[in-house]
Image (cartoon, rainbow, N blue to C red; front, side, top):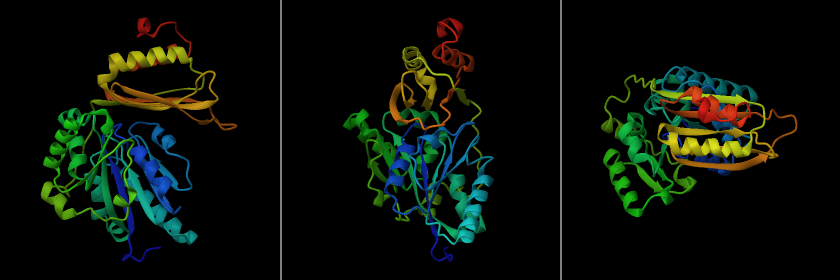
Length: 334
């Protein structure tokens, strides 16, 4: 254990929905040599889909669901970290690093506050870096529409502009100028698939409270950001999905409903497939991939999460029912 002079580094991964945080987290976990790393994933909604997208490792992964860290579960964050310290002491092991991936709807300031204002947290932990991942294609629109997207950039000391291959060099330059106007001190990386040299992100201790207080003098005050206009709709079922019907439904969602869908992702049990199928999308961009084989005895369940504004839950349930063979046409039933 640490004696307070050699504090445990904490890396905070933040960024709007679908930017590539989990991809970056997986890269970090593949590279981190020590197994004594705790990962805390915060999900918006009642199901922990993100934890299932994180590759299986020997690190400890804990999920906090149904709320953002800045609100009702911040106390859970402190409790979890204290429990980790106690358990490591009892087991005679050493907790060497903590990585927190916040929900895409979280303002990172209260997470940062946790490590600055709580006496126990401040004694044992030190903020290493606050890394914000942004989506090069959608960030301009997100910055215009969502205050939390602007907060995520303002409080970062490392900004990863991901999916650079989806925009032109001119658009990238304009985005860089806008980001620097909001946070001139942060180091900016331009990436595809969140490929960043990890020595630039870990053990750098680049977070500077003084700089952040210059940007936001009220940072250490209490903040609440609620998202009453944003919904998280979860659909689950153990029956196999018809792949042709699934293609038709997703084509409709992407083309007709894409603007209102901030983020959608999940795990599918597709007929004729021996592997899990992972899908994820942001607005009109969508991709699916065959994942690992289903394990023996594993519950082969479809789990879909849609996060967006003005979502029609009955319509989504109708489309899901169509894919499961319950109804003949989701459009006439929505």
